[in-house]
Image 1 (cartoon, rainbow, N blue to C red):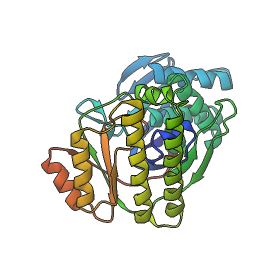
Image 2: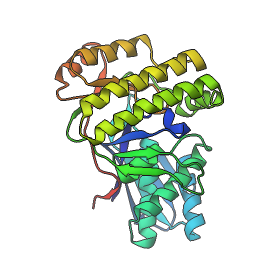
Image 3: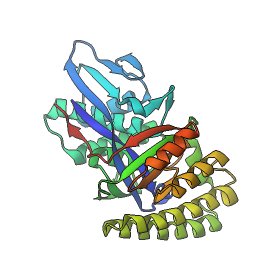
Image 4: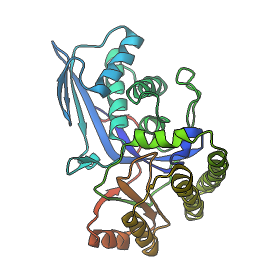
Length: 316
């Protein structure tokens, strides 16, 4: 059995799509994959069972595997998500699709080669993800599902794979997510940002945002995580300005803003809505978040406790 983690993109949201620096935390919510020899290819997943080509995610992985090796083995695949990737039939925005893409790619790659070459698996999974998302996105979630918690800059060309990553764990801090019960289409939201990419005001503010993110990551490398969070908040102020004043969309509802304020008042170093699209979860990090959890639960928010985890691995 091979598994890949979900993620929280807490530094670089949206800006990562435009080449900005980011930091992604791999978390202990995983997608597990195992394969058994079979007379007919069959996929057993958390979202249904499929023969041969499967759904869009499976088809994209099959395509890159066949391009690489010339065939896809006849196997019974079990591709199962941790339960916290979904609550009340809604995705929680923790990167289950990317983790599943990586886990499936790795499992089939290992079946064919008997190796777990992270760099090769990463390239194949990125190409599969690129096909599935029709070129929208940055691939930070795929990279984190392979390598774990990382600093990341996207590739400029999917074929060149000229991305940058550097492993960087944040350490054993308390992290919680509040699930709002809402969901947004990540690809559609990113498209709205892409439409304004050439706008001079957009470029000016995104540059300022990237400076704050770079400063946050420099402090993170020094282990000064609470100081880094000051710059995470400043970057998010710039992001919300871009969204509301330049693009004309709202990333945060009134309830979101209230929950973020509560978290900071109750001891979180920062509380944001992570990711590069979507509005499913609110993230908080600090030394002790017990009061944050209680305050959010009083507001009727479902709490998901998370911890930092490693990247792609063989479980058994």
